[in-house]
Image (cartoon, rainbow, N blue to C red; front, side, top):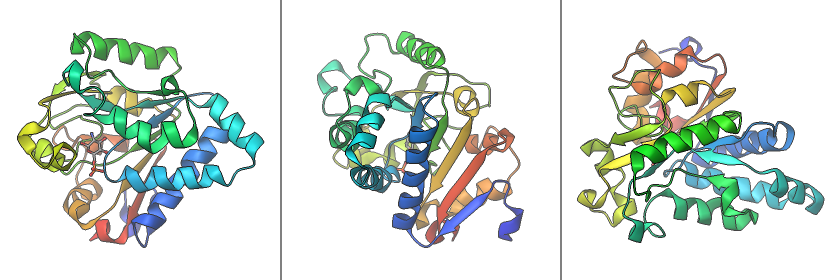
Length: 253
Ligand code: GLP
């Protein structure tokens, strides 16, 4: 497909480090200059170098700027697994965010919000989290990765654009894709998650979709070519006026 035919403004960079650096610059500039609405954050392997690059950029800021950024930080993660309370500190995305951002940036954990996957009632928790985000004004810039089956957040196919924050079952293919975070055993990956829906994602002011690595080439090709459908949840991003797609050469295939 000629790149000019991409349904989204497309930035292609040589490798995942270059992509991470660019994504980090966009996140930092959003947080510094447009702090009115919270950032929307994602987890997963794609985001590891992004947050590393972000921490590196913040380290280079003058102390007063860093302090300002710390004071004004507010972000909402897309999703988390439903886990037993005993696993709260080891499983799921909270420990990942602590290591990637909370500690290196010196933030209060409450400034980096995630749904509570260990809540006694995950369905009620998903409603609470959606309402909390709404009360905070909705997302400013939403950072997104792309699942191998076309999911964003944990909006597994089939998924329509009006689905809101909710508790969802995870497909076996997603559990297999995420097994490394659970000691390599896909059966150890939780069966359910809480995720922001496409409704909250599409309500963001702008969206940055980051796709890297050869494994994502088939799903990226689908995203660039297929019309919007519930079978490819990320395809509903076509309905958003301010999406940037940031990819590396490998993902482009
Ligand atoms: C995961 C997460 C998404 C993530 C995507 C890609 O299952 N729920 O938020 O963006 O799938 O993950 P990765 O970057 O590890 O390929």
